[in-house]
Image (cartoon, rainbow, N blue to C red; front, side, top):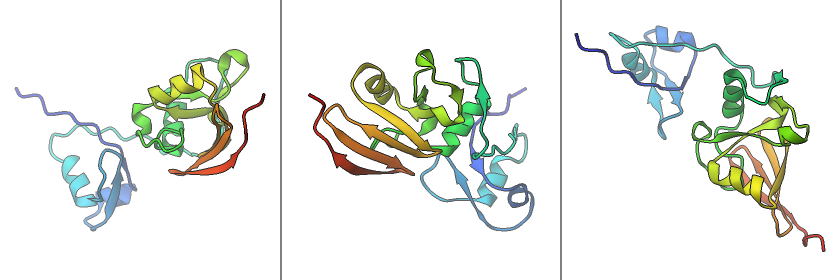
Length: 168
């Protein structure tokens, strides 16, 4: 007996889009192009094993007292910010660490308003150098560089806000 091939896709579309015989498009995180709903239906037909996960409200506030980040909270963080939160970085959030913006050890909560995806390189820069940042809403981050630059990363774009000299 041949075991069916298993693939994981993250498709964002309605149940109606995949169950009806209508043409449409879907957002699939693993691709850089538009995918038709017909293609998604083909991937999910036959002997494919399909797991459907519930919709996550990106505006809901979730909190836990633990340091460890529950899967649902990590997923909410990745969906709200689909790439690394560091300025100009485009590494997909699914390949990033989930960072406590304010470190848990200094009182930062494990909650929706205090988590962000950071690739390993930028997670280390934030943890071990003078880079700091604040999360101002679900997908907006104000970064401060060691050299006094203030940058805003918002919905995939980065802009320089001010250039302040470092404190003497």
